[in-house]
Image (tube, rainbow, N blue to C red; front, side, top):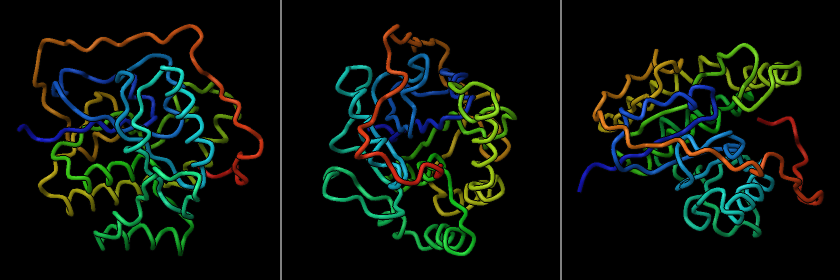
Length: 250
């Protein structure tokens, strides 16, 4: 058996520029929040793990289910859905697993997260917590794409227009999830999981300042970026009765 590989795909701009020659032939895929808004299948249709904050779970779970039922994606809804807990999901989400009990297994990581959340109301982005989840789940090689530390000056995600609304959203994200805390957490992860390799597969990602780039391991690029259909899902109308109360949380 080869080492277990996972590609953790954040929603930063660089995930549209993955160097596929740095990826192994087989790997699991982890994605976050509104990933289905991408304009192409940059890492394929299969999604083995999805993660969001519990405060967003009611809407994100609904959206993931919709794109799964439509056949746009192949999401493991029964085994791969995780929530980073601010409050525990209720009985309507029986298949959802909680990230916090896993985090609590590593005291250093749990203390780090709790210190900033409790005393400063600062939170690790979902994607950064997903990197921790991949290590905790025991993957040997954690390949990273789309982690740009919110450096883009105009928009947080590649599917957003570079307008005033997007800039306000980006500013809110930076205030809620400071870059220095993300960098500090990445250093902590590398120290706590010394047998895990954290490797970037994006040439222009800002995370390359803190995570080494994966080596080129194959020349025969067999991965084809599949276009999405013209009638692809862009906006999902979530039923009013299950919309989240706090829309300001990112």
